[in-house]
Length: 376
Image 1: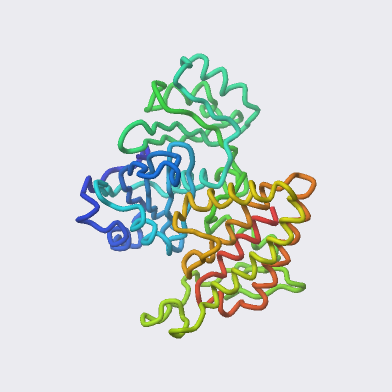
Image 2: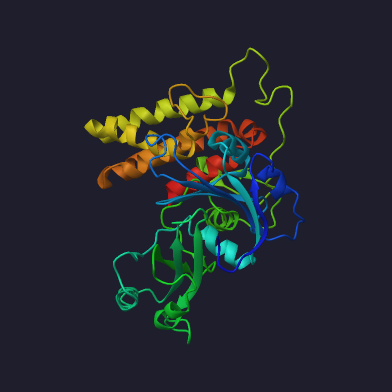
């Protein structure tokens, strides 16, 4: 899949080897990824992007990262959701592969899920000279060049650092050395964030990488990395300090943490959150509300097919955060700031009032990530 990675295992039928067990059985120093071969979309309306691949990566973060890839998009999933997502996707006919790869390569690849490319080139109708001319015309001084080919059963990606100020890293020098050539697929250019040496965030996807979130959180809170755990900021603002990233496990008898017969507090909280947000959104969006709402629900269901905003469950209720983010992003430019401010106040309110419950259920990070994306 990644040029520069080494295949260790596979293909093994997914029905015979659990990819979660495989990734968790690797030693702590292992850097690599488990890849599930493509699954075809059985429901074009629910999964319009066609084939989907899932990769679980060990890139040195506190927990594995899961990247979902289609022929047109990519996104990161919280690792806690991976078993359910893979079960929903189904493993019939899919194969499992294990690869070893350098940590820098894995982190570069993960960072592309957070960034918008400054330039994308389809190779179908261009020759090598035209491609070089087009890429060289970009004003990008340093960045990440990604060569991709998703035509086979396994997607292939080649990542190369480029720079106009470092000898031997310019586009005219790098392009002829690409192992994937120019026959099919595409090339994308991502700007590098000099502060972290990764693709610079553009439109952040559903889950943010640990180092990106912690860096931005530190900027917002002005906090030291050595602080032991999270705190609530003044005036409802979220100030996050680095703390252990493994939430307490719920009772095996009552996974939701709620006694039998009682309504799940998570469902109630997110229902109230969305009711309050919807009032603001209808005022801001006016006649656009119905269309924007349907479009936002479809985007959330791309990653969580079982999501139904009118009938939330304990597992789908947190996706209300993603729905709010999608609706805010779709608002007209001159009304967006008003809707964003309303969303920030509502998130700060549930964070302050229900922090202990959110922490017990492992949802503090989800709320913080949503807050930080709204702040951008």
